[in-house]
Structure formats: structure tokens, C-alpha cells
Image (tube, rainbow, N blue to C red; front, side, top):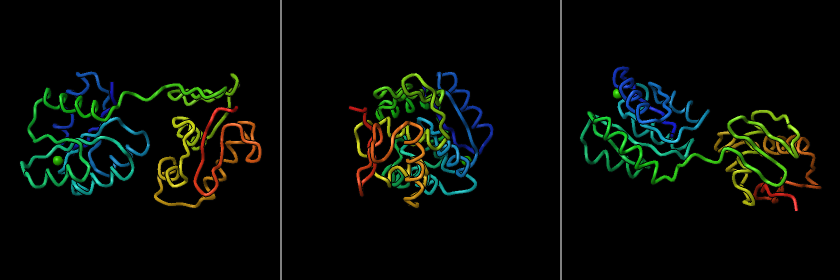
Length: 225
Ligand code: CA
């Protein structure tokens, strides 16, 4: 099962799309504007977005670009215009596939399945275990040696982002973009959260166990040796 975000302003079309996708076993969320789509994608990323190009608040190309800016999520564009040049332009701009309205439910589901397959979006691991650190993603629960660690939302997001990429140095820039959703920001923000997180995990910057700062580059999470 994948989570599909349907972005469509026409309520009749929208409910038909939601019905079709639900029948095919997907989890479906739906919004009617590009800005709501952005908000939704930032808050709780879907596995795939079905994006209507004729939205009331933003032109389709811009909506696509902004969506791409906040999330690396596959996007299928849905357009009422059979406009070759425009479709090619949007595919080049990062759309994964397109559908021309009106399309059938089976066509929609075939495209969604194909794009998900190409994107390799099987659901990410639900529980991450690194050393004696265990992160239960759906429950947003962290334990160390079985002891519950109370984290703020941001601390959890930071830790789980790093834990999903063990032994990989994640740049400060990437963390600011992916965890704080800022293109740029104060490095201090990251340092402060990192130091709180360290304290809660029972380590310090001088004596790291999990969280290793790579000076001038970023942070790496590894199992203690
Ligand atoms: Ca529309």
C-alpha cells in the first residue's frame, strides 16, 4: 500500500480519484490547491503525488517545481490539455509521468503502480535498529537498551533521518533542508538540537557514541564500537 496525495480542485473529479485509488488499496489524502499540497507534502510526505495542472492558486509548472523543492517524491501530472510541448517540458522539469483527462481508473492505477515501481518506493523500514538504539517510526518511539527516550518532534525527525542513513555523513545543508525544510538556515539551530539529542542519548560531542560530527561537513550516525 502506498500513500497517494491527490491534488485536484474539482470536488467531483477529486472524489472519483480518491474512490478509485482507495479501491486499489492505496491510502489516499486529497487537497484542492497547490499550497495545501505543499503543506501536506512537507508535514507528512506521501509516496506519490497526483497533481492536477489546472489549480486555482498556482500554475502547474510552478506547483511542480515547488513540490519538487520540498520533497523528492514521485509526481504524476494530470492535465486536461493534450499539449505535447507542455507535457514534454513538465517531464523534463521532473514529473515522473502524466495522464490526460479524462482517464480511466485502471489507467490511473497502472500509472501509479508503474511510477512507484520505478521509484523503488516500497515502504521504508518501520523500525530502525542501530546498536542498542531502536527507532519505531510509526509510533515515533525511541529506546536505548530498552529505555524510552523522550524526544521533541524535531529531535525525533533529526535522529530518524540520520538513522535511516547509517554510517553516511549527512551534510548540514541536507539536514536543514530535509529536517527543517529550509533551503538555508542558521547552523546554530542544528548544533543546538544536536546537543540536546546527544544529552538525551547519553553522550557528548567530546565522547560521541552514535552521533559523530564531521567538522565542516555534517553529521554521521553509527553504532558504537
Ligand atoms: Ca483543475
